[in-house]
Length: 161
Length: 376
Image (cartoon, rainbow over all chains, first blue to last red; front, top):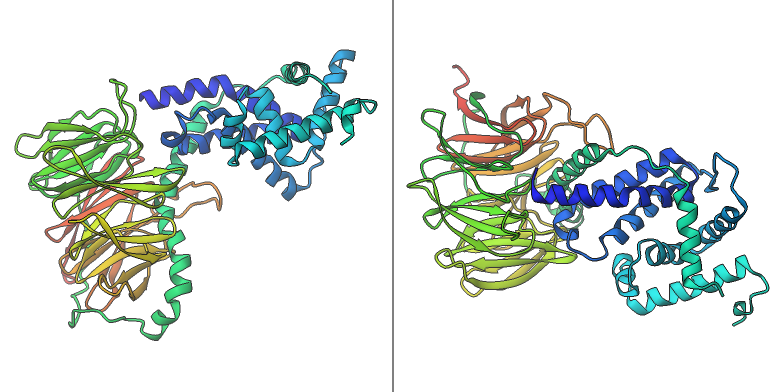
């Protein structure tokens, strides 16, 4: 096994669960989430020479997973409603409400939230992974935060302005 | 407003209850490899879209073009497999010359004696991987090693002495080298980037970078022809003066694979494109379904035909649908019958002395093909 392949396998083991879970939360379908995450990793392997040393490689994979899901959802018209097999606990329910709010965000804002909060990327690297300027990424994040606050807590004063 | 920490914790918590499926990294890597191979072949297909728009009417008006050689055409003859050698799987390129047939791939470089079909040397080259290219010129055999090596470096150019079959020098270039060509006294490599790619001219003796140019996205291997270097990318073909390293012309949409018979030759979507190196005008479009690569040898243009896929999106090659075709440059017509190949992923061909060698990635088979008279 080449060092490159070894490096890719390591990243796959670390990041695939996250890509799958994010895909599942957005599609509500395990099969589609798995397919999309795997396809995103295959495309990453295709471009590994260019991606491997980018600090935003995880962001690229997550963004690609979501883009694949979005195109397939549009094509097959699945309702993107997350569903869980088991009854959520009360505090978990609040977390799922947050996911629901994220899934209602405009696409670019949702991507920025996932890259910033789940992939732990800096705003600079969020911008690189999304292919936009840092200021644009920051604006997406700010708007997303405000929208999430409005969705989750209608009495939150931050909704104004 | 919810604090950042709160948002992160809640998102994390809701994800943790979702159990991921078992790892299928091997299948993902296999799919990634196939995507790599397809993109290498598909560059030519993208090029034809622009070619058709710009030059289609011209081609229709003059289907045989303005070819420089007049002639009565080759005897059709019959293509036959003369020899097959099974090497390690993962072969990515082949070059004929310097008293041998030289093959590169994941396992390094192999030298074959074309007279006896025996392996003369196996030369370990670290970092060759799935994108290594090989070329002959300036008295040496040149191999790219784009992948990570044990010493931590990536993107190396290796010079092999054909007299000894030993590595003479390794030049660290950096970056994922994808293309290799030799001409005008330099060794030329291409490096893709996020967006435009780069073309570097390397001094064959010292490894010094002589020229550094920006070219189009996903550049292919540079080709030397008629005094210039030619580099195609997804949307254009760049013509470069090798002495000054300056761009002479940009031609939209053309793809170039080989030079010979007074022309440059490339592949498009289900066709071979012949164009004039001076004017850049298309001289002929020869229909060849799934044409993937071209090698010009004297009076024969050899065309590698990629296998058909059983799936419209994923690449599942059908055995026996790859082939070798020949074009007569005097008439711009396909001659003889196609020779079917069992290869699943034939990636490269190289011709010399009236024969052509085809390298198959999937099974590691190298095939030598020759032409017999029709009556034989």
